[in-house]
Image 1 (cartoon, rainbow, N blue to C red):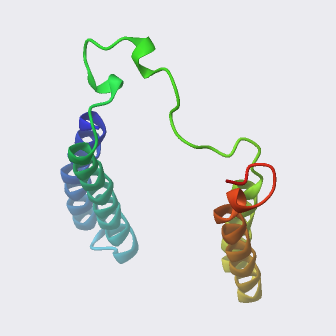
Image 2: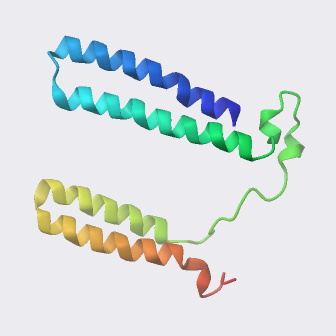
Length: 132
């Protein structure tokens, strides 16, 4: 996790520098300046999360410079192999953002569809073939 946290944390000063340059060059245009500033904040949150997570978990095989490929063998997590819910959530997000261009009524449809898809994804392992 060290590499991941450093990658994102090194991006924070870069984005802040770019934000200052952009703000000065554009005459303090608010949308782009705020967007780049928020990008720096997002990189800081992700890098900070990885830094905290690095202290909480044991070293992974990919963190060892002398590690071998077979050290990473085995289970890597729990994944839903035949899940259609991520597609439903992506479609709901597309409908929601399309509604920003077409009309607010479509945003409401996308949000409702997204909430239903999220509930389906959360409770996917509660019923059916993969229930536990």
